[in-house]
Image (cartoon, rainbow, N blue to C red; front, side, top):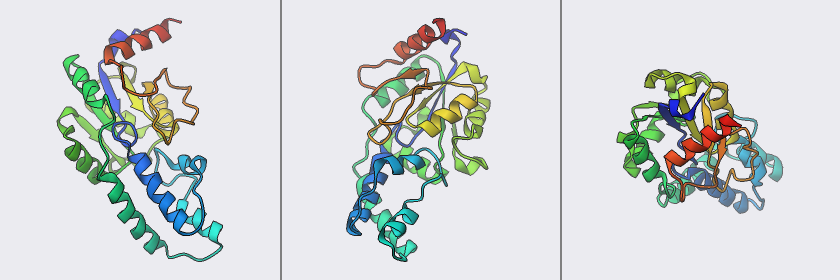
Length: 227
C-alpha cells in the first residue's frame, strides 16, 4: 500500500502537539520532593498516554513514605503546580507548520486523545489550533482509552477513511499500540518524558518536528513499505 493513499492524519494531543506530559511529571516531582522522595521517570512513564494504567503516583508516594496521605490534598497540590507549569506550555516547535501542510495537502485532520474533552478544548483554544481539526475524540467518547484502539477507530470513521488510509502521530507506547491495533500507520515523535521508550513499532520515528515536512514523512512511510 503506497503512502500516496494516505488521506487523513490523526494526532494525539498530550506530549505530541504540546508537551503537557513534562508539565505533569514536573508537578509530581515537586510533590515527591516535598515528601523527601524522588519520582522515577521510568515509573511515571507507565501512565503516559492512558488513564487508569498500571501506575498510580499517589499510591506510590504513600508506599514510599509509609504513611497514610491525604489523597485529596495531594491532588489539590498537584493541580496548583500543574496549572503553574501549563502557563508556560506551548506548541512543540514545528507543529503549526505540520498542521498547515496537512491542510494544504488536502488531508483530513483528526485528534484522538485519552484526555477528557474539556481539557482538549481548553488547550486547543489556548494554542489557537482548534480549527485545524475536523474530528476530535476523547475519553468521553469511549469505554476504553489507549492502548485500546477505540479512539482511533472512531477517528477514521468520522473522517470518512479506512484505517490504512490514515497515519497517526504519537509520542508514547500506549498511543502507538492503539494506532497500530486500529490499523493505522504511525509516526512516533517522543518528548523528554517518552524518549527512553521503545517506540520501534512506529513506521517512522523522528526525534522532533524540526526540519521535517509532512511530504517528507509520507515519503519515508512509502520507503518503509517498499522494503
